[in-house]
Image (cartoon, rainbow, N blue to C red; front, side, top):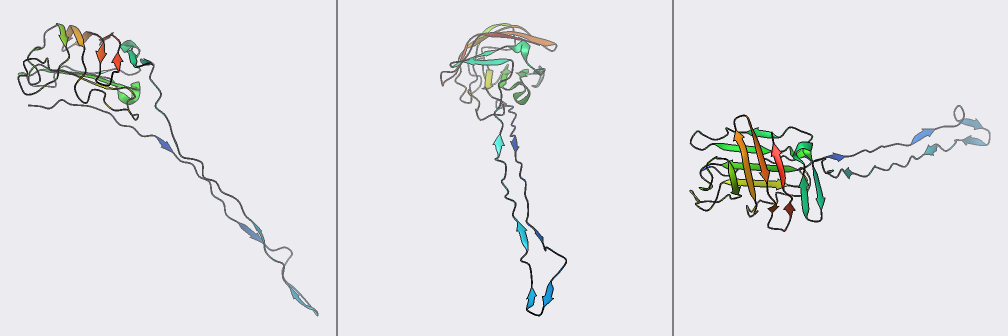
Length: 205
């Protein structure tokens, strides 16, 4: 049995700037001077340049144009994604078609993915269209699960992590199309174990 895959893309952005300076030394005049009274030497003139390193800064991940947050509810506008979503309708074997749809964490500012198994992680869905609840359970055949697994990292390469790492999210999707040429899915409200929700939205490609 294959374990659910989680593609997270990771990105760290750190800038550091520093400038340095050293002292300069000069002798005034054109050399040492001797006289009957003795010799005199001018003390060297030294200029000290103070150096201060620029503070290290880490850029915060800005939310992408396709996602917004109101309280604990996220709204996703799939049509406004800056990048083209990844879609693979044939990642599994003929005996277990596997559909994978996900955003680009860095390019879109958040990572949202459906990993949809027709066998192995649920028996309530085998690839057909219609309305189905989320469900990603073991052991096979998991008669009360659909094998439709969800991942959601609200800030992509930022500090947040996958809110459904525990596979406890609830919600449903309606599949109008899911084939080799594309997908058309209506996502119902999704609720995660920490209370965060995603408002209903549609996704097509």
